[in-house]
Length: 326
Image 1 (tube, rainbow, N blue to C red):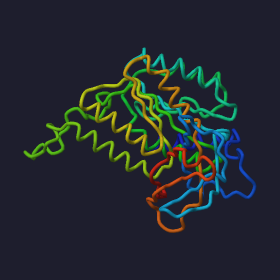
Image 2 (image 1 turned 45 degrees about the horizontal axis):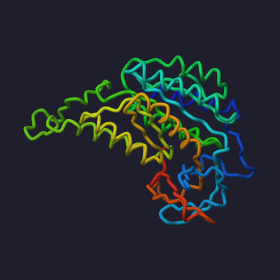
Image 3 (image 1 turned 90 degrees about the horizontal axis):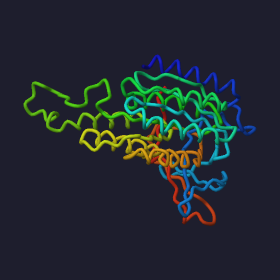
Image 4 (image 1 turned 135 degrees about the vertical axis):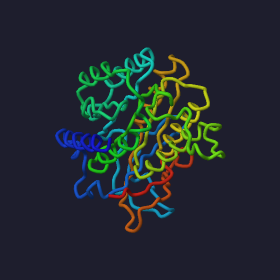
């Protein structure tokens, strides 16, 4: 998995260079992007996302210390969207989301590139980030529905990939998972785990969702070093205890990263759910500053607005950030 993810990072970064992504809207004299911590931020006013923000209107604090805004990308900036499919169960539901996705990618601005990946049975690139809408439409149409679930197994390598693109390029980067998998679809046995079979006090069989909760918690901790928002559209809500633990874990991870997860209870909720996530995702900002000189964090993050109307705005972003170890 690590080797495959490393190869994938190299491929996508090379493609980004060929497309000129790394030079997109880079201001003269601006620090190299990899020296910055870039925080994803969303602003809502009266139920609508604010898309006209300017650099001077944002105030960024780490551990309550205000730091100068050194980097800024908004909704009009070049953007890379990594679209990751984890589709293993329901062809009818996947067809619904594929149809709506094909419509939405045609509407994206010209300076938005989309890469398509598949996470089931190991992470694979299906299409490098491209602005070619017809290639995107064809790739989305051909996404398969088979194999074993891979969302939990690929969240960290995908976040690592997205973080590399973010820090080495003056673009916004977002990750959107499309999944229909349940906890039973993984190769790992989460259904009836035994942590210590020789221990009569082991309660894992009685509380079988504990293994799921612990795995999600470990993944959440690993993701803390990546300032990449995660968005998840789950095509099929499942009400049993194990899947409730799995689904709530996905929701918690997405929220902690500044993103959002939506669970579809019916087929009719799929297209509106996708629209909701894309609307939020595309309205995001990245506000960057130089890493603090000492320490790796975690640092508590706070982003505020200046000026008229700031008090009435709702600002959302990750709650903390830390510097990845090399």
